[in-house]
Image (cartoon, rainbow, N blue to C red; front, side, top):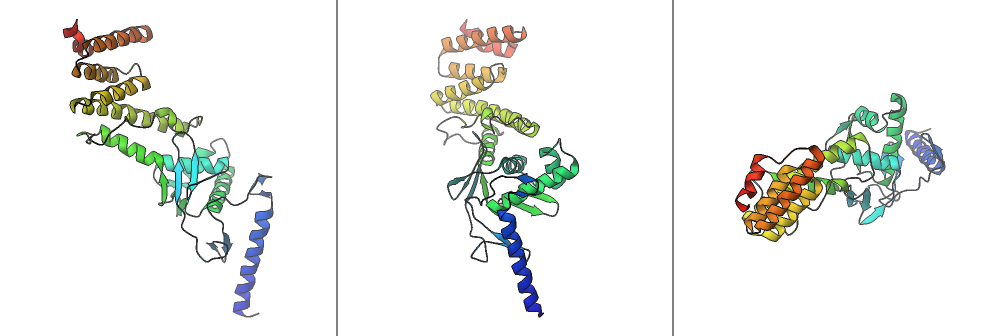
Length: 291
């Protein structure tokens, strides 16, 4: 057999193996689940390299990963259904925001599984993700990360919130509504520890940004939006005194002393009922001239 024939034979065998694997409902420990290609594209392994069917290179795809208000992956604007293990893998890598070692990923997502089984589950999830689109996940050495071309809504929202809460603060000239995400919006009904930790981190960024926005809008004389931002901060955490103090200050800045006193009295009653304590002296002094 010539060298060329040998390569051709190897390629033919690999293609046949791929076709058999794609048709089989049982592989990598998966039983009876639909493994049809996702809407982002299709491909196969030829001589150790992934290529799209009918071409020698993958057609670029616009990939958008949404984690706020629920998980969603869109490919060229079309929502794509994913197995749960792929959703969790993509969400974890997106939430972490930087490359993660395979052992960390497997140990976190399959924490109750033995190490070898967790590693196998990760390989299965990666295989499924790559069938959807090769650009979803980047592997470099022993590290995994979200593909550089994947747009993630969480990233933009968090960056904007940090900018608004920065010191010195970012200008609010373009703000027409308060920061448009809330702590409950991150992967609702997901209760993994890594999700809860990220949700709390975002909650703190969110609250600080709302307070900063309210102060800046008030100083700019845009009192209606300032009140809206202050109320959003108070609604997110009613016992947070800094949020209550900002809202009271906004009411005073627009000349609504009665609103300021009413807000203080409501907060004082809530604080006493919940914790048996009174507002701080700094907060009391805000409304003292109004009494």
